[in-house]
Image (cartoon, rainbow, N blue to C red):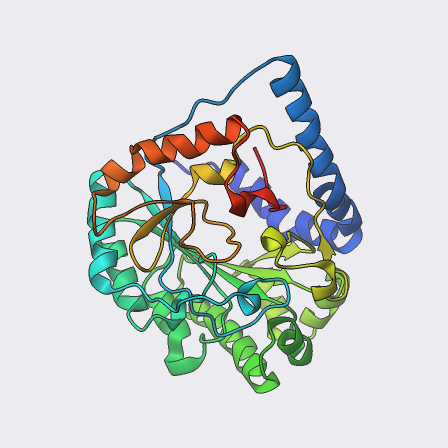
Length: 355
C-alpha cells in the first residue's frame, strides 16, 4: 500500500505547527470543554437516549484488539494528581511466566496490541520488563508504554527502550525545570534532573538509531504551556521537536480518582474535572480490559478506588483461559446491573465517566 502523502503532511502540520499554537493561545477553551462542557454533554445525551428514546446498551463480550497489562503496582513517584500516595496496596509484580501465558493466549484470540499503561505503578520498576517486551514484540504485538521516565537514565535504559523498537513511548512530564518537575512528581530534585537528562538522551538516541518509535512528552504541568514552550526553546529539545523527533500532549484537567484526589492536591493551572450527574449507561472504560500483576483480569484500565483487585475483576488467567473469562457471565452481569441502577462502588464517584 502506498503512503498517503497528503494525509501525512496534514497530520504533520497539526502535530508540529497547529497543536503548539493552540496550546499556547487557546488552552482555556480546551479546559472549559473538559472541565465543564463535557459533563453537560454526557447528561444531555443521557436525557435524549435513555429517557426519551428508551435505548439500552447491549453488553459487548468481544475480544478487544488492545489490552492493558500492568507489570507492577509499585511506583517510584507520588504525583500530586494521582491517588497512589493515598492508597495502601499490596505490592505486586507480574512474573515472566504469567506475562507469557497471557501473550500466548491473547495472540491465539487475535489480539494485536498491548498497552503498558498501568493504572497504578511504574512498569520500568519490574526487573523483567525488557524480557517481557522482547517476547511481546517477537510475537508481533504493537507495544505502547506509559512511563514517568524516572529510570530512563539508569543503566542506559533509554537505549534498551529504543533498541526494542517499542512502537509508542509516552513519558509523563511535569516541566523542563527540575525544581518544578520534582514538585509535581514528589521526587528529589537530583532525581528530576536525571529524569530530564534521560528524556533528552532517549530522543537523542532515537535520532542516532533512526528509530521509528513514537515518543510523546505528555505534560502534567502547573505552568501554562507558553511558559514551558519558552523554557524548551532554550534547550536542545526545541531542535529535536523541529526535527519531528517527539510529539507533545498537554493536560490541565484531572479527574478525582474515585474521590481520592481533590482540587486541593493540584498545583498551578491544574483543574479538577466536574463530575456529571446522570449515569444510566455503562462507562466506556468497562469495555477496556486490564491484566493485573497477579493474573487477575479487570474491567476498566483507568482508575481504582481502594485496590485494583476489586468488584471489577472478572477472573484470573492462572485459573481459567482468557477466552472463558472474557465470555463469562460476570462480565455481562456488571454491564446489565449498571443499566438496572446497580453501579459497582468503585465507579460511583469517578469523574472519568464516559459513554
